[in-house]
Length: 369
Image (cartoon, rainbow, N blue to C red; front, side, top):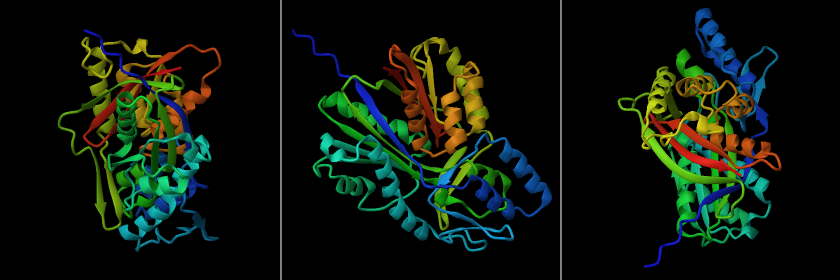
């Protein structure tokens, strides 16, 4: 009896990234500051904002500051007392999301249609449109319209891992597959008008961004070794993302970092191979690609796993320079790792993870070649 051939390994061969033109972090902090009713609330907000470890966040929405210091925006969606409806925000998503995704695809190849793409996987949780982004991108890039399409929607920050998992399975089942994986998020479309400091601080994290990745069986770039999901019991209400009349409303409970740290400490102490560390110690991993969900999230991962001080530097850099771009963020971290690789470096093992509603973690082991 013949032994079946070993399954092929999927590889991220390249990653393209794109940001909108407007750095709005400082101006949006001013806009949010004006929503708060009293000095005490503004002082708390400002103190926490300074600790965010974010210097820049990008948006298609252009912030406008008057001579009197009042902050507005180019589309009029954040006018005090009459923030835009969900319908209006979805109009802007339909206009801008394809443009940002195409910029990321162009970083891979400005004529991606020549690459023989067989599958297109698009992840996005900040908007809806039909025909979907998958169809729009195929049409505008010249990819063969017979390419198989999948949309990963409304999963939040860990959708990047789910999209890569799908590409991983596609390549393993069809070794000649050439999969284009796109993550595009316009998080700044969903700023909410509120006087609650905790909600405003959560909104302070989010930014817009897009990535495009080519995943094939060709052994170069990042090898995708295996995937594993985990959920923290009794945490369903800690991260929620609901569609309201004025955009999508995010709830991010202050307990999230604590629960992540506790859960990872348990994972670190496990000796079996069923956990996210696969029975290995943290020392067995050279690289840590952690979703830059916020400074407190990265601190929680570092604390829970007892990682060295600089282990999460790629994630902290992405957070500082770009903010939290939901599903695109982890791909920015992986792109930074690929760009930093030097000629002659050997393969380096790594573990990637992202967190989202559930409270759940999506993880995968990889090798940077």
